[in-house]
Length: 247
Ligand SMILES: *Cc1c(COP(=O)(O)O)cnc(C)c1O
Image 1 (cartoon, rainbow, N blue to C red):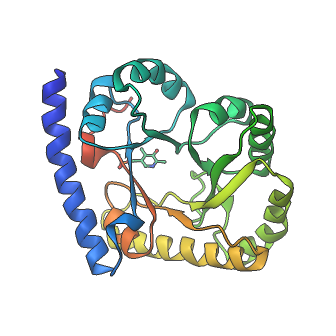
Image 2 (cartoon, rainbow, N blue to C red):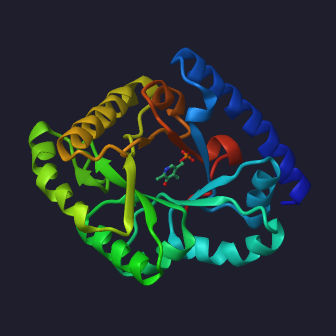
Image 3 (spheres, protein in one colour):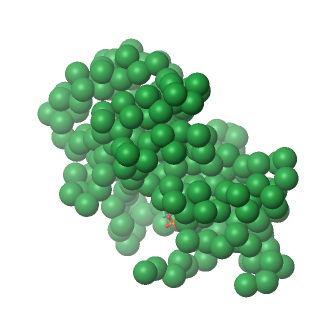
């Protein structure tokens, strides 16, 4: 696709997304700047990423470390000094943890203690502190990654498990993330967002982690509802770039 064509399309889509975010914020009596829009660039071409950057987007999300590694060298050349923040939003295998640590600004998808420990070690070796979110499975869907937080009993069991994060001094846990089930009506996702927030509040209280501020929830089909329920990060792909060619 020609860069100008990608630019026109992204620009127009982004205007619509911005309107929708503004409206959702207004409805929830929230300020627009409480919500960070992460443009999900998985499967998108370099031209599309550059177009999004040209439309002043500065937060991009990828779900595979290989794809990010393939894109970054080219983008560093095209984008000059004005580099965006990169968000890792997909499942990360522990053995790839050290690669993610040096490339990514926020990892949304820490879904096991094992991964947390590997990231901590990688961050220590790279002499940095890596900001992360814990991915929670609050819907109970078996296909979803994440710490099990689907029932009150599961959350009880999480408390001692997550207390072990305390010793990981090179991880900066900023909050939690979830993937809502795919549903026809975004209202059906609302209970999942309400629950993520409630579980976050409980964990933050019981573990005395006062800095668990972020709620990463909401995608193309349900981001307005997520914003109404307190999302601080929304991860949006198709509404910005159009349908994805899957497979
Ligand atoms: C693909 C993806 C998104 C964005 O999905 P859209 O439906 O394109 O908005 C958000 N979060 C994660 C984890 C994803 O993998």
